[in-house]
Length: 581
Image (cartoon, rainbow, N blue to C red; front, side, top):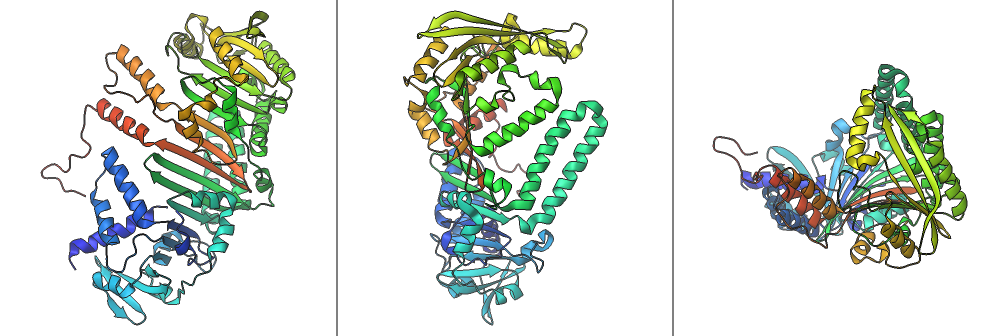
């Protein structure tokens, strides 16, 4: 066996096991008390997906992937099978990170353990096979069912039974959220919160010490920061106290890459109960018109998790005094009880500077009591009139019945931000406001009330308001857009919040701005480019955060980076005289 193939084997093993997903058969042989598990549902399929993506993007070094391919082709290996990597705790039930490698056991899809070991130059060592890979000793033994256990821990492998029948216990640890993530992932990694409690508590102590130190340096100005940090600390302490598992999922296919991050709490805990029911945030897309957009963000306030979080944020902002009014019309602290859902869409603007950025922007608030919600919003707009903060004085106005659109009364609102000429901070803000809003020095637009919504536009755009009112009646909504439908299909069940990022429109606008400065992007942006999709889902006492990035967006970003870096070739290989690592 050549030294090169020894290195190939080690590189293949390390890459296979450094990736996270659930291969059910392999996990069925992982002991119930494993501190953390990394699993691959189908090793060869995942290898093919990653290889295809790397080739399509034209990035990275194909060498390691070729090494993995060689490893998967070894005699005795069932490459289409599942694999798992179990990190076992010490006698105290905690994972020793410094010595974790020695207690790690890989469960590989190997039908013929002897043929596999002999292909790597292995020798029989009692019931085990001993391998020397690049100067390091490993041991392997069959555990039946088409699997073999592989580890550098001879004593641990001797005691390791690898018997089947553990899948149910792992399913209970994962919870409803984790099982759903695992079923849809090529790879999944999950860890016991209890096994990592020492590290989590140490991290929170360091976080608190850092916040306190910054607070002492900032004095009175640190009030908001320290209060927000307390919310984060409370959430982290809930995880340490009541959390069961932390889960990471990864899926790669021809459409793009999906990354999941989840947490499962004990269902009987306060946090677990709050996360018991999910939402249906994507339904809010039925309330906005089908227009090109930069961003579309929605949150379902009927989700207990979302409502509880924003109530906590509202209480926090209330304690911060006048700072609660800074966002005015977008501050939900005073309207949260009448708010059932909200969607904000920044439509693709005709221009991004000098007043054009918000030309096609609107917000739709869904409510069972829209008139009450509207009255509260109007009161908030009026209350901001004359407020001074950070070198800026706010001047607001509100006019009822300025017009009628689609048989609906339209009211107008505006906000002007006047800087204090003696305040440098105010002058800097004024310069930015002038670039964004033009001579109006602030946003303004229309209000309209329907049977179950309050519609706000951020410019006096009658056409936009008309399309929004028609969408409210079911005509040409964003939910009917074919490309948006594909993106929504990526959002998991129970979505409490979502965001769609129109990467193609953003790139087009950025290119236009750069072209004004003599630059720009020299490539065509596909009209059917799918958006980046983000979401948060809650159900069964768990929470799941998902990010989906289409392959087309990744290719576009790569092209932009290469053009802005002056056409640098990231794959040109080593230069003469330099070693290649």
